[in-house]
Length: 305
Image (cartoon, rainbow, N blue to C red; front, side, top):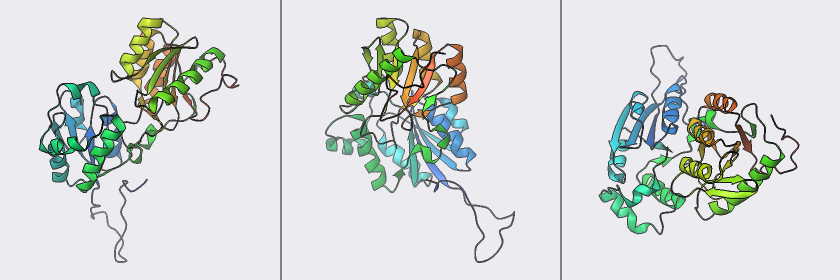
């Protein structure tokens, strides 16, 4: 999707001059936690886009202010304020980037009138359904939610190792098991990550998030855990797409995990160079796997590094 890129062309048969201004395209950024919103904002600015952001108090990194043309800070549930800020900035297309802890839905939620109007329409708080409902509200207001890869294509992941280490046969078997379990549970909105060791499921992600799930696996099983992260089967990648980055790798290194595997093409990679450096330094295999095969146990590409 290239419609977000800035381009200019002569009009009425006249040659463009250096003095002519190319109108800036505007992208809205609805920012949650982590480095993902920062990466999206930086990529958008490099592409020449004007970035109007809405950031969440207590969740979004304050450094986002240096990366955007305008930032409005909101509390969780202030949907009307978000819409107002985006309309004031002339936003017609917006990206959702970064997570918001689901646990805060049970404490810290401050819904405004616009959010209260949405709540009766929700049949559940399942992540995908909740975000689809919110996206419908934005689109009814003339703001289209778009895929982050439209403005941040460098975050797309590929199949294969990210670093020097490659999973051996035992690790590939754990990857295959974790992938199957994660996909089955993903259909029930149970989480995106599963931790496996020696053919046994050690921990499954719930609303605590990936990093806490990884730490829990380390507490239960010690070193050598295999962490598998996938997209849910019906996941709309416009929002809540699974991400891996330095934070995920750090959590794996802290527990002495042997491998971090993720679904190639449906997971976003944040700061690949740092991920490679950290993984190689900690002797951690980091690998993208196919959605249809998940590095089968007999895959010839796996050899210990």
